[in-house]
Image (cartoon, rainbow, N blue to C red; front, top):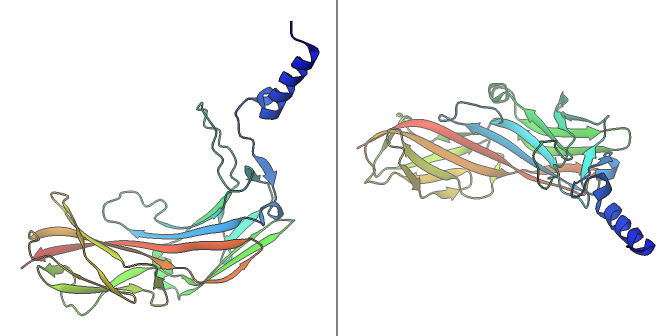
Length: 258
């Protein structure tokens, strides 16, 4: 028969690991913005012009995510998030109820905004301003000239839909105020076979130079170009830090010929 002291030890251990309320489950603590001010805001602007994907959900999106903390947090009701005055979709985070067994995963609070690429392309480039606030605290993120439609522009060609074997081409990243983190990535995808050829790129500022290999089979291709620009943070207030980038990928129908 177990002694009273051993029973107290077992019950204490059960309570400590949460077994009395469900062993192994992660519990999300309600948090205000003031509770999250020691975290970092991680952001990504995604701008994907794809010819292969049927769905465009998330292709044109700005995402803001709180970094992980020492505990799982679920943002309390009452918080709002805006991007240049327009409401963002705010997801409080916490532990999703998936109904699946196993260890729970904590999702950090996040905010997203799906933009209209045609509208952004027609509007003037301007700073992107995100404001999060509730009754306890406010956070402000401002990115220089980030509210803009990204694209690659081909230089000096009267036949934009044609690439010739052995010839060199230049595509410039726009807007010119962006600074790329690394050379752009360029590939050719054969429309019929799906064969992929990754091309060597020489980057000069925002201009990507590449040569179509002379052994490339003639035919119809998708020219895929992508890159990530440095986001110039003008203001990062109310949090420990702000970090992220501006990603763009673009598909172009091309014909490879002699």
